[in-house]
Image 1: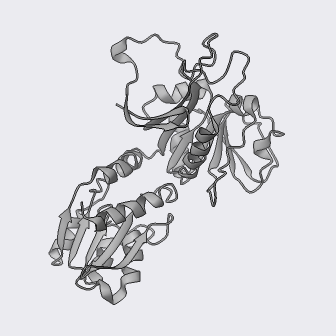
Image 2: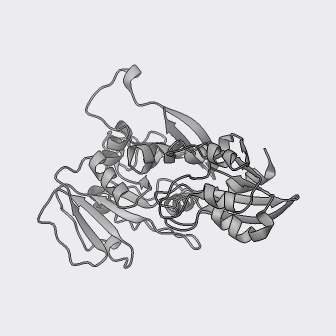
Image 3: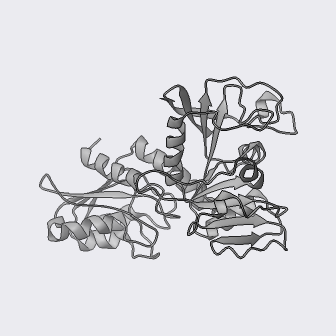
Length: 347
């Protein structure tokens, strides 16, 4: 792989989680073996990566090459098409790592008709960055990651409800980074009532996700810690027409049917591109049995809790045949001191 294309991919990875419904993209402009411009798409509605890089390069872009993590856009959205900017800048060659299957037209054709050489150079690292984005955009729902911290026997708590702390401090810090990379963190009413969590991101310059609470009945204790954190939006989904609050940063969203699909579609319409599910067994199991989960992250502590199956992270009323059970593949594993992190994707 060209190291310039790798630079573009790394730039895209650096802004993952802060572009809303738009994909994270990185771009590098090179002329006569020298980097003359670089950029990344920093936020929804802002300049795209190609524009950032070309604005930095200015006249030095003419006759040069632009390396991009994702095929340049061809449509008018909140900004003009990037292919237009590339043509106007006098670029002679475009190299990109992933084809954008959501584009309404072929960027290659437009660029080649303008006399620009176009090279599609597939890169697995970049492909993994956009797989869930393409699914989310096509289905108009956010990218979904389900996170579970548990014992070796899959328990999120003891039979007495004790859950702090099953996993270690290294896991806790890793979860902060997970939250930083997502637009919203979603949980159930039972979890906030039992654990009184805050769902903050305690890392330097960390971005706090919007907090989404599911409560069909609307039984909410507004004295919990999560509601005391001012200026951090909280959205409560409920079927209870009578649920009200005068807390300024809390919004009550009433739906006739609080199904996962209805909630996710509403979140996408509100600009939420990625959701981290951090919940108890009920909500976690509902997501794992659904078609909407893209990624499952399991943090295992070297402990065996035992007891009943009340706090097993995956539960179902149905007994499935082995050929019918939800299946995942492990894409990455990591030791976090004495705890294990497994990253899995739905097959």
